[in-house]
Length: 206
Image (cartoon, rainbow, N blue to C red):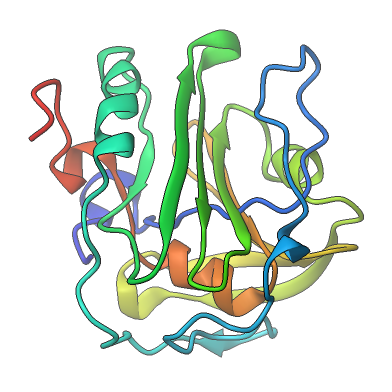
């Protein structure tokens, strides 16, 4: 969890999807309504979006690896794309899809459902932070910052939308966003993000 700064200058956050508008060519996965499941906060409390909110590491149990993510991220690694992946999937969460596309410099997505069945999405591409946030979160409005420095990932910009929340950050050459039903849920995923290399993913799935 603290290996993130090694490859992404203090970045290790995952994205949670709420509503996606799709990219110009319609290549990004269709976003779903995160309110399809309960929008109660995830089991382990995480920081709300404020101008200076900070997070304390969660002790809700060790996350587990995902074969779906390990398989999909191989193409990103071969393409030299610094894909973000969770160090593990939080207890009770399920990975529904993970996809990498080499178009426009590389696009990476992970779709999950949280312990309450709500949709969460992590998206990463060459777009600007503002561009990727508005692509995946309808009606996005700035809502301060979320400080995940205690997890080694630094500060993320927080956003509220018409039917969900998001956190996003500019990385080296890419931007990432996590979209979900509420701020607690998206930060639960973002705090465990690492680059694929730091997470131990490889062409051999190791």
